[in-house]
Length: 97
Length: 476
Image (cartoon, rainbow over the protein chains, first blue to last red):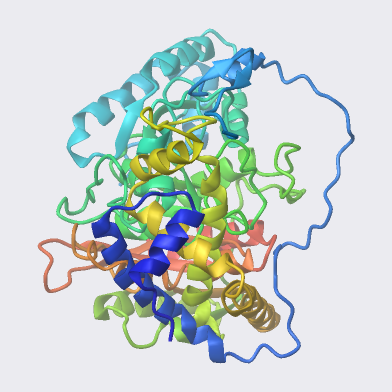
């Protein structure tokens, strides 16, 4: 039976790039273990010969012509919500020290 | 009940000049101000709505929804106000373009007057997960309106506008419709474009209307439905359309879902559903009990697939592209971690962590792939059921609206609210919740609405709406 320890939750939070408080780590290890125990009822279900479903209406490879279309938006409009912009580009913190 | 005439009647009168769009917009804005205590609305788009109403009155738009005010759940990108999805991380987000659904409604003359509250990012069944405030149920303000489109359901029940837009990933249109006594329509997966709608779980999300009448839901769907080059998952609309359908229950084969009528059903909900079934039988329908044995597994499947897709969709909120950005970060990792820590509420964090777990190497096969395979089993059972009957029927939820705070400390208990709605999303089939009487449970001071759910095969939206019109008539 899956049980998420505090350390497991911390590791998952690091993978998902979310800092969690000490309280949240404790709370989540209890709550998420309960949720995982609930979903584990699927473990015993017989699915012999069945394939996983990824798309319910049966669409595959929806293509369009590779043509640039003008939707009438200036780059500045689309960058209006970006926290930091320089020369019409997203500005982020240094990645390589 | 409804304070508004049918949408078709309102638009016809606007086109003839008997009603003014400006008056309709003012009526809606006045109702929003007057019913503010229910907290259905996050923000109005008053200024833009008034401008658009003037243009309609000047003759610029004689469309099928001319002058009809509506309210959009705040996860639709709409001009004239910020789009937050009721989350702190999107506070201040100014939509650079509009959702296709909104564009299509506006092209027919409809006017968005406000943005409705929801559980942040549509994660929830009560609006209690909104990062801002909880919406109150119009029938009993100590109770939730359902969720996640709880603001939209309350708005329609309070007559704030003739219709509201919602999204439904695991029941988020149908559950609030059930709890607020309104009509909620979840179309076939892909029938309405999701371009410009804040994504939750992309293999499940659909857009649909909440209304006072089935007829109104059919008209709104008709305007929104069909392919959109901006959403590659969209499907063709029914060439016959969806508006103005009328139906007859006579000879229709209807299967009562055995698994939804079992233990755990609130006694008063059972009574209302059984009475409705009697009336449907009297109207000439051929009713039988039908079993889909894997239905009790649907919620477990859902709570693997949904958080997996949520964890992926929410990765874009990283503090770099848009939305809240943690200003005191020393490096990029601190900026990611700090922005997401401060910007996301508890439920978003829960779902991202579970999703990250079920998708992580070593667990992927046991959880995610297994869930997607049980999903196939469920789809096959729906297909088998629809060989025997035209429609499936049952309650929308096992209970009436619960008290604010009642499930707040137990996320699993909250998830169980969706137990009768998630299967339709997993199978991609259309489903509707119709008002079906009321029940006064022991702890309630007033009668609370009950919802009846009807489910149809994929792409049978027109047939479903027609049978819903007929059912609405026999239940009236």
